[in-house]
Length: 205
Length: 109
Image (tube, rainbow over all chains, first blue to last red):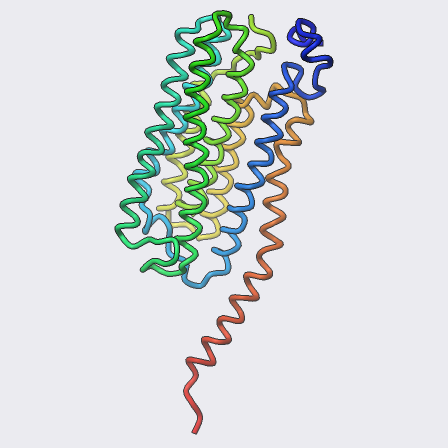
């Protein structure tokens, strides 16, 4: 039995078979698996439509990849700051943990801002959810739905990270918030992982 | 040490791998290769990057095998879904071509 489970037998009567640290971690993994099915379905549908369309525009020529490459790099950086936040908390340094949690949230906020800028620019150029000047109308539909769904996840992640910042601040014992920060990290890295797939499938391919 | 803490891998090494793979991905689309080759390479690189994030940032490498299988399930479902969608897509494309040909054909007098 893990330390956490033995310390709080009333709260956690038995450890989970898959994640001995906490039930919450298993819960997050199951949520992420479900969420991944959601994104997987969207990308599979995109692939199906794209493969069978006769006039699908060349995405990287229409969308441009310079800004998106910067956004990708930013999200990878924010994943690193997230693992650093957890690492510092594990070493008992709450101040550095809070700093890195803040930097992670900042990275996410800049990402969403750049996405808003990108959308504004593309809408101005004629890319709409129901049509565009370059070809198949589903090109715009799928672009806005998939990147919008991901953008909502990033927005939710930023709020989640800010809530965790408060959570760590309110707990003087670093061990008391370690598990919760690790679970937050799982969500944030998942958002990064999904963007890796979205960037490849919707911008580069 | 907090309960349940893992050994932390070299995160900066993973970061550089991800950054380099992203640059290589962008370079590949401008290379004079067949479209299919570019597609296969890009999907391969994307899966490699996703695996790096899941294994090291999400610590899946240090978890039980069953948790890894749970994490892989969506990939299997999505891959299967592509094959379920494609036949319908091709059928629509074929029908559309037929309509286009009928509309485009010169009228017989």
